Length: 266
Image (cartoon, rainbow, N blue to C red):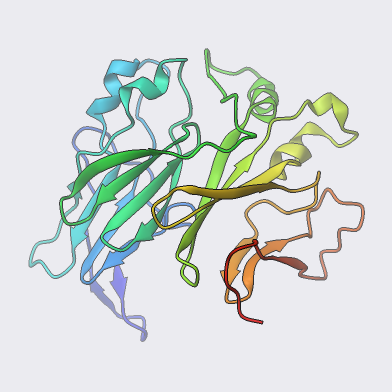
């Protein structure tokens, strides 16, 4: 629904998908709504029948939709964009992804694939895949069966994966964050707390063409996952991880990261 600043509802837009019963609509830091004039792009990354489907079914699902809010009868148009079938060649993996805007294109970063998807807004389709592998991401979480009790949490902790894709408009580049797997037995912290705040966080730096400029792996518990943003002075990364000994919920603490070879304001 579209509201004005007085709280008056101005319009309503139905989101329906005849192939995949849509049960998830949101705009988060992972998959925010992307606007192009009166057009809005949204995403629904999940499958309806994950444990029963096969790799050949991946192409049957569309995950990105667009709505023309200027239309007299707007409704969701689902773009022919799906997970590549070979993304499950080693087994089933979670289909979640994050994305960022890049002018006429959208860059999609899957959790469990080194390749980025490049989606053309004007052509309304995928136009390329771009390899962007972080050195610490080598083993994705392959899901074989329905997990029992907390086995899924432990397997996820042991695995590597990508997470937030963040665009830097000041330097025209991207930050692709990632988690490095750990053995929960190596920590005195309960594995549920480790899962909530993964201890090994890294960032891959990509230029506007999505070529790798460099990478950095933060120290154990050094940074708080999901709590970072871009400013004129650089990349702000929270150091207030709840698993740190000096954690204090009464303060916001950030390190400002500047990478050699890039320009920053003082």
